[in-house]
Amino acid sequence: MAGALHAAPAPALETRIVRLNLQHTWTTTMSSSEYRDVLYTSYSREGITGHGEGAPIVRYKEDAKSAEKAAASVRALLLSAPPLQFAKTMNEIFRRVPGEWASKAALDIALMDWVGQKLGVPLYSYFGLDAKDAPLTTFSIGIDTPEITKQKTREAEAYPVLKVKVGLATDEPTIEAVRSVTKKPLRVDANEGWKDKEEAVRKINWLETQGVEFIEQPMPAEMIEETRWVRSRVHIPVIADEACQHASDIPKLREAYDGVNVKLDKSGGMLEAYRMIQIAKAMGMKTMLGCMISSSVSVTAAAHLSPLVDYADLDGNLLIANDPFRGVRVEKGRLVLPNRPGLGLIPV
Ligand code: MG
Image (cartoon, rainbow, N blue to C red; front, side, top):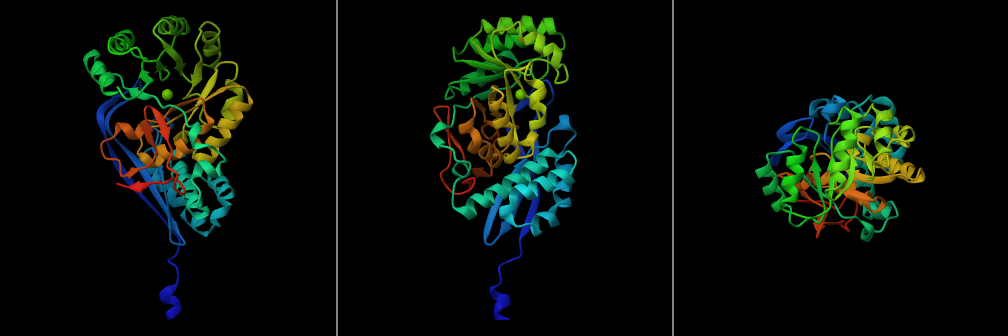
């Protein structure tokens, strides 16, 4: 009986859907919304709890319920697997579960948070990185009316580089509204908004005159040949986002894009994101870490890999009003990684 009283609790995986409320209605070429539902996971074992999060992406036919169902389908596998065999376990989860990348990301992040805590090292140290190499992050300005765009740009005063969403008919008024308020460098994301290659070249050539550093996903993901044509006629880097979900996508993008935007919710977590960054670098491409609308769990996980990349767009947690955790911080635009074990999260 005494043994039973002192036995460690059984390993547990909990999942729940969390509604993140946005500070501003968020509009891109794909959607407009006031909140996002994400999947939270927690993996507990030996008195340590790792936290994970995945933001399901509508474009890949995911939602929070399907993500939660996918996580439940591999609960037994995860709980029976030795936790330090995390890469083997995640490979098996990737093999068993079709799609549902956000769900896989939520599992991978919880597992990696647990491993970092178990080993007593922050995850950037686990990956052999120097927190001082973490880059600046952009702060994103969603599509809106010129007046609200100006107001959002003023509110972003603390951030030295801004990311602006374009790809609708209002591109020029949007950029002009931002430029009427600030001279900061801009990075622009068209989210596949331009369907015609000549229009894309015209728009990008105009953006080049507006202090834009690079253009993300100017054309639909499947228009690789057209994007190659566009890339040969513009003078700023062209970065793939929707065209690049996994490591296996990268080789075919080399001629059409200068770099790739890696996101944990697309890749299925930190391990695949790390592979993608290394493959892109080996191919001489630029690398970027981005995020969806997420809380500090997912954004901090991405930030632990950010010392590896050229560009970071890790502001999802800054756009919400009810973040349940504190983790990575931004100081003068630069990502400051927690030096606590694992993700280094603190509940708010
Ligand atoms: Mg993008």
